Image (cartoon, rainbow, N blue to C red):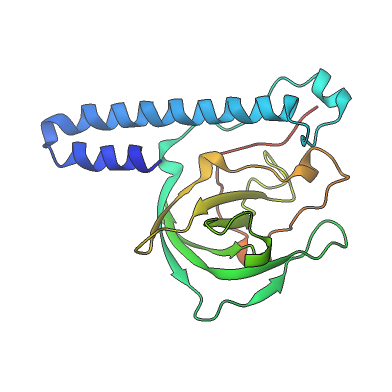
Length: 208
């Protein structure tokens, strides 16, 4: 993602006569990247031993359902860190009570709407590695329960090494495992992360 965004910036400053062609190239490269990413997810769901799909589901699996890739849903946002990093419990679809750190908020714009999402991070003792910089964003929007899974979707991004600018890639929005298999326990997006707009990007409902 960083490479594509960087290329767009370089091309734009070269001059208006070259900008249109450059943007088209960047968008095409981005779509190819997302399509490759989605194929990788489909492969994992079939062959990874940790896949949430049952044996019967795998037999008839033809790939996940997605909205078409839209470059407009690669959104630049401002990350504002909470003054105090407090631990809290997020509700799930079961009685499981996972602990997270409320890291901060991201502020961004889609169309004419100014939007905000709360961002979470695993506590240090639950992070996969010391260098793990993954931030977690569970959310719902106006497609939830319609085209998309009613329990909401998730996106992730990396904590920037410097500055407060990040990119939210809603084309990579994905369903929690309980969307495929009710035996799993999944984080429910808190009310503050219910967006009053349609996010027509990323994964749709899982249909067997």
